[in-house]
Image (cartoon, rainbow, N blue to C red; front, top):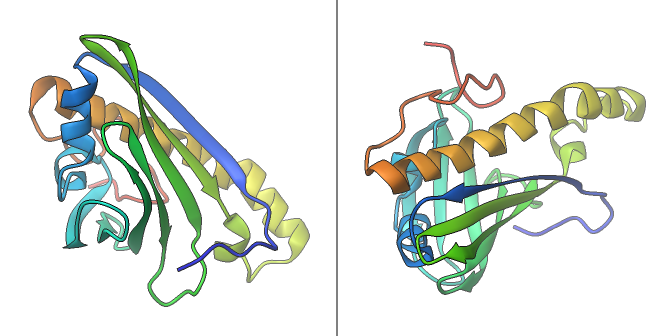
Length: 178
């Protein structure tokens, strides 16, 4: 999986404070299969290989969409970067950066930044229609998505309890209502 250098990325980002140390938060975000406990739209997170550059897993969303994640950088205690896309596509639909910043010894900040390439998923539409879908539907929906994911990791890190389906709101791109 690689990035198509001809495409322009749309950047979606969200960050939130988590009331645990950076070491505790790193333990959560770097653990194998972490999406099973922390991701409100993840039906199943299957690990292929784990930890460090080259780690790979799949995420099956509640709506049936399955995407592969390939980890391209791994900065111990700080964060990682990954590419995400369909196994059958040569190009990633997004590059995602997860980063922990120390606020103080008991509070950390988790940020997730998605460099998304909506033209890959929307390629069947004309350029004008793609732009409308991207601006009116895709980007607002992805903004809600990344906010819910950060909240899911915050919830799990602070409580130790797995998040529930759609716990922070329904997302029609990745889930179902029931």
